[in-house]
Image (cartoon, rainbow, N blue to C red):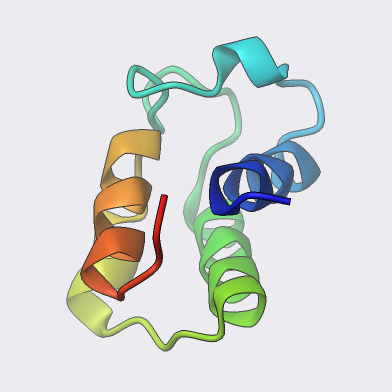
Length: 80
């Protein structure tokens, strides 16, 4: 399974009403119903567990869009 697929699976677990087709750089907390701080921390926890990384506070605050999440993963040496 590719790292993009792993990322997609994380988001689909947190937001089961989304489809794979909706997972793109236009996806962010402003256009996903229920994307709040609790869901954001759930995404952070799953990212850290799945990719064996530790996000700093600045990155945790940026986990608010698909594009930002990809940037954070790349910054943490995760190939996408």
